[in-house]
Length: 189
Image (cartoon, rainbow, N blue to C red):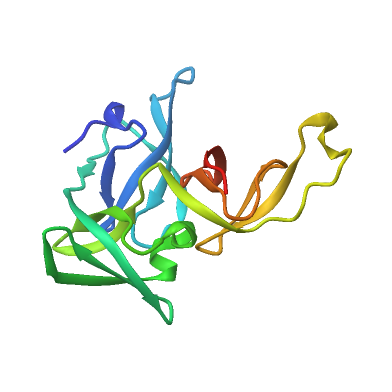
């Protein structure tokens, strides 16, 4: 069991037999009241967030999550298929709703981390930064560069990312998969 003071960002807990991760936590002490830990939690299965306050008397169960190094294979009709690295016979799939926004950054053979709760794969974690090929980029228009502008480019996975004007079709760019933001150009086409 965890104490309410141990609820820091990144900690995983169980509420109503569902695993949640703490996104934000704030300790509040009001006059003549019990101190509380106000948290923002994300359900690791559904991806939904909720806000909840915990008091010193609350019993908080820590979620036992195991991680497995895996690899994305392919997507078919909303099912994303993966296998365990070193054991390709151990395959599993997740639906688009379970993966959420991370689905648009999956490309074949991308190494990911599978999260397992109660012997079931519930979600995946992508590497923070991944390199992608730009497949579509509108041309930069002369005179647009006074403020160091940006344009929307399409990556090999179909994801759309805002990138600097000097990025062209065929370039390899590094993207932060958690924020969906352009980081840097790796290779010029």
